Image: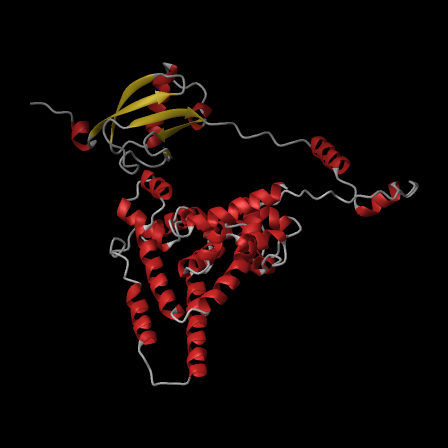
Length: 406
């Protein structure tokens, strides 16, 4: 049997599918040791139906691997480019390089830029020096309609002070707070924002992992998604959350352990210290967490990290609003967030006189809810739906809307 010698040493023959921008398609048979330049030459001969009269035609085209979108190198072989049988290549004409602008065009463009340049302060003063001065009252009329979310924060700051004083008078205040805090932890473990969970699962994250990420990040979808991406290769990513009530229970046991008998005044002082420590612990747990992506985006605009965090805290982690705050008059300031409402105002007096609010202020869970909403305003909806704190929040909202309209 006669076998051609070139077929023995030429390597494996591949059938490559070639396509052009005009929609022409055909198969080219090449060996693995064929260079991409040679393959391109064969394609162009097939494409133009004959010999290549213009040698530049070869350099003015390129071959692209369709699946990986790679531009194939002319000097490499088919094997070097890891081409397989029945791979699809695109034969595309290269874009011509842009013609360099003429010196006359450059000078014309520069002249236009100078003409369109905004005048500086000195130029404005010089141009308006001959104009007469007019004293116009530019006082802007302030609208009486106030934003509920802005005012709610002030209301909560003042209500927290009232609730702390009321609960401190209760002889069982320490125990009540320990139970309420434990109950709150249980609620947090059970409570999952369904909308946030759906967003994460639609992205392809497993439901159990998404729930864990949301609980670790105060139900923030953005922060939960970042946590999931960062821990995708973590072997313990699917392990359940450690029971936070273990340390809490230990602390509660230690706090509840009766000590030696002391005088009434000393006992009252100790109880007050315990309450103060519990309040501090609650505040630490509700610490504000800025959206890391928003922080990076705003810092890339040239703002300082502290300024960015302040802006996000003032604007409830909303990046666009935080940017406007940074570029504007920066009102309210971060210090204003800790200021309460005027306790002599009709609004605050009406809230305190409401029976539902009065009863709610004696419930430790209401105080915990107020603390949570201060640091995480997005959690307000969850507390509105809570059977214990919801009625209180509803009454505050109704009183505000009623007085705001009048």
